[in-house]
Image (cartoon, rainbow over all chains, first blue to last red; front, top):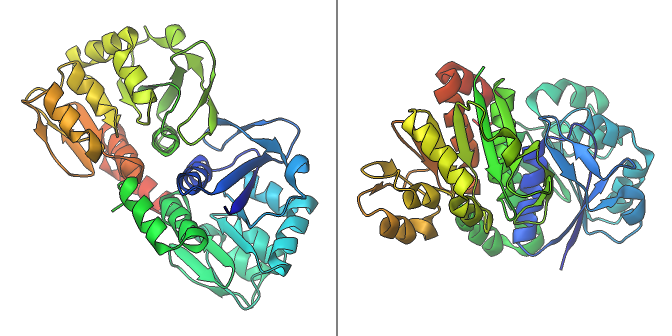
Length: 186
Length: 186
C-alpha cells in the first residue's frame, strides 16, 4: 500500500485538502495529514477547522511514497517557507518519488528549483510568481499537469481531477476510473 | 446576507460538506455548521475530523434561510432519523425556504414526505430507497436537480456544481459565475 503525507497549515484551501485525502483513502492509500504547528486543529481559508492526524515533526522521517501540498493562503506560503517541508520535498524528489501540489502550492516547488525544465501549472494568479521563481519551467494552463514525478493543478475546481490523477499514478487507471464512477464524477 | 445551516454527524462525506461550506462562505453567505451530538469534532466517512461551529441545539431555533444536508453514511441516516432535523426541515419547507440535500441525504426529504410530486435526485445507489419512500417523486439522473425550493444532488463529484447552484439561488447567477471562475471550475 502506498503512503502519502499531506502537510498543511493555517489558511489551507479546504476543498483541495479534503478532496485529496478523501479520494486517496477511498483508493486504499495510506494518507497522513500533518499540521506544521503545535496545534492539531488547523483553521482553513474558509473557516473550517480540521484536525490533523499528526504533527509534522512526528512523521517527517518516515519513508513516504508521495507528498502532496494543498493550496490556500497563508498555508501555501507557510509550506514554502518551512525548512522541514523543503527538506522533505527535496528528499522525495531526489529519490524519484512523487511530489504533487495544487493552487498556490506549486510556487513552493518553483522556489525550491524543482520545476526546472518541467511542465507545471498553478492557480492562475500565481503564474507570474511561478515564472519569476523558475523562468525555465514550462507553464501549462491545463487542469492537471504531469511531468515525470511532479503533478500540479490549479484550484478547488480542479482538486477532484487532481486527486483522481494521483490515484491513477499510485494505483493504476482502472482504480481511478472505478473511483470516478463511485463518487459520481462522470 | 443569507444564512445557511449545515447539520452534520459521524460519517459525513467530507468533500460534500466542505464544498458547500467553502463555496457559500466565498459568496459572503453566513454558514453555520452544527454537530448533532455533544462533541464538536466529528469524524467523516474518510476519517477526516472536522470541528463544528456549534451544537445543533444551540442554533436550531434561529431563522435560517436554507438548510443543507450533506451525505455520507451513517451521517445521512442520523440526519434522517433526528427529530430536530426533521422539525427544522419541515419548518423551512412550510415557510417556502430552501432545503437542499446531496448524495444519501435526499432520502431524508423523501422520508419526511417533502419530495411528493417534486423532481429530485440522489446518490445513484439510493434511487430505489427514494422511490420506495416516495413513489410520487420524479427521480432525475442530473448532477443537480431543482424544483421550487428543493435542490438535490448526487455525490462528491457533483458537490461543487451543487454548491455553485445554491450560490446562484441565494446570490444570483452573476455571483455564481464569478465564483466558478475564482475556483477554476471552468
